[in-house]
Image 1 (spheres, rainbow, N blue to C red):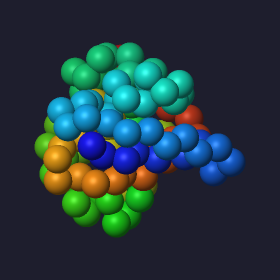
Image 2: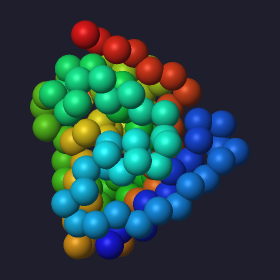
Image 3: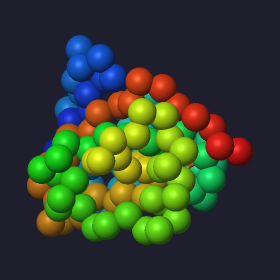
Length: 109
Ligand code: FES
């Protein structure tokens, strides 16, 4: 299980949940009322699933694909540790993950 901490854009609200290996981060976020639209349902065509990963956790994730990087270029408030939540799957080796909501989103479709 991976312990995932979702933090609101203003930092004021924190939700901690556990996710099974193989769970997609976007699905876990939506199941826990996080404000990620995920409009394209993982087709890397919208960037509304953009999240900011804590720096220490970011380094432990598999690298983003070129397609993901391209889509992130269009995301609102992108940072050096930004990812698309539809492209992150929890795994046995991932003990914890801290995920912050961006302050807004851009639907690229
Ligand atoms: S859900 Fe559209 S890019 Fe992730």
